[in-house]
Image (cartoon, rainbow, N blue to C red):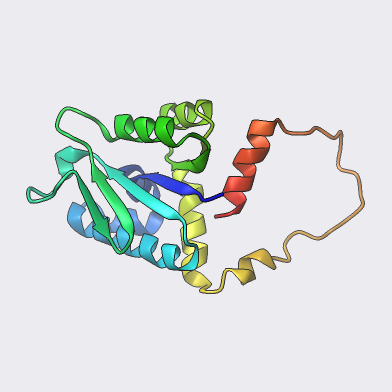
Length: 172
């Protein structure tokens, strides 16, 4: 199953340590920095990525949808917020979508539609890890968790929806 990552662009830019530094002086430079990081990630993991920005900050020459090295860039229309665009996309894609935002309303809506949701800081950590390690196999061979037979409390199986969501996030 292919994953379509839908990113709340300005939310991720402001939540990211490295991107929030570039954002205030020049919003266009912040968008370009985000897209370069996502391009690097997309080369490692071939997921489909759509970044949604509020149209009020769009360049005047920009169309509502653009493409940058295989990453779809969408600006909301006048009078419409990026949150609404993300909700519509999650309605349409359902289980195939993974929404990246720290906005609780967007995350809850996506989960109700069957999509997975991840916070912006957690996705930023994944992007940082991918840029530090060009080979994602190093991430899979992480030794921070050791296999043990020691019991750690009562067992509770996650719901089917939670298990599917966790699988999507693990594919990042």
